[in-house]
Image 1 (tube, each protein chain N blue to C red):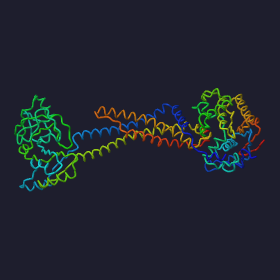
Image 2 (cartoon, helix red, strand yellow):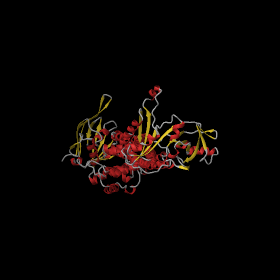
Image 3 (cartoon, rainbow over the protein chains, first blue to last red):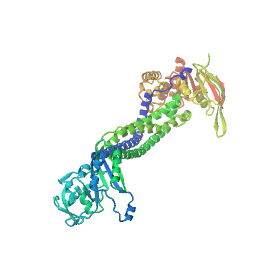
Image 4 (cartoon, chains in turn brown, green):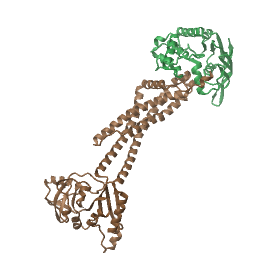
Length: 412
Length: 226
């Protein structure tokens, strides 16, 4: 009889799993509620992470549409206060020509679009216009930040100091309400001057390399801008680079060029690639945060499973005693209960993955995002729910296994 | 030939607060293979504690217990579980069948903890149900059976693992006299036909009288073996 102690100790899993399912089915409502808890938790993790990823992808796609070959340059005065106190000495400004010459001075630059922003009062037919700003720009801006023209034409180099302007889409809509159906050729008042409208821009998608809203702006030739407003400095440039350009090198070149042309300036340069990298990083943090929020409900679901298993252990004390008398070892009792809680979690997790994906599908549908099933969220959702089942099932199962068979058999 | 069970100077005390309460005060007796033995005593005599010790559900405070010539009072929990599974078949006063399982599944249970293949386990269980004339109700659940029928199923469950010993705790206690009679007849028949060793714990002298051997317990001592 000694040798049977040496036998393989494990009990076959399949009959145990069958038993577990039988037990769960015998208290259907309770099992259903536990499954529901895990399902909601898993669904929220899956949906939140999926939506996070879909939103990230959407944002990146929009961003990439603008072109990943853009570079924005902002120019600041190094010590503005001091210069102003110097009074007499004129502040050095970058001229249009200096800005445009950057393409030849710094290799790797395809196009330069310098611009200035002005805030003169504007009016049409005596009525003040509520606009975002006046942009002094060159012909290159149209291509660099992709402005569509629906009527007339865009600013040209040939316009030089002409009093011409191009109006944004939203501004055109507003003027239409005021009865201006055909704006090209009509005149606007900017400051003291009349400007002839030569073109209307189509709807413009916002671009993080351009700090004005084209839709609600008036675009005038840059040279004109510098003469009608003495504060119209070329403080910003958008650059389009050659594909595969060496960005750090170009940044150095631009810095050097600007410092050679004008003294006492500081530049701040952002590239699309850097922006995409930081955007991805931010989005990753956001997605992680969403996953954490979802996990809270999953933990609540896990506590539900634990609660149900604890009740089940108390209710089945006698059964535990009988099984022990018949020869179940402590670990057999433990696995009996653990299997049940894992089964609940697996089932809830599986349903949760389906519901989570459905939810993210509908969110994507209503937000007009493209929809794809990512592998990460279901994997995380399912994995975590199983882990929760084991974690929260372990204590009740352990408790069951530590019961004293004599006492459980005596209990009613 | 050595005995199936040898109990040597078994003591068992419980601690109530910090006071030691002796329940068994030196029990000595043997059970031979093929015995039909009853342990008789009033309630509080210590017979239930004695049964728990014989059934390896409890360990003595001191003393030696040889089961199949092996000292078992020092076994680990797992070894005791295995020994209960293979060597002892329990029959309880209130049957203790699992209510969610069918008759057949209940009888299969001991084999679940032995990794017996499902088909073989079912065959053996059916065989045992035939032996106790319950095979026609193998699909029923315990609550669809009478007390006497449930106890027969419980006996089949005790027998299915071919244990060396059937340990029955007041097996007729919850039954009316007629069905109690039938259960006793079944024990006597099993003992006579298959030489199954049966130990019956009871307070009922009438039951004890039907056994070949009687161990009388009072106040933690064996007062008489006959």
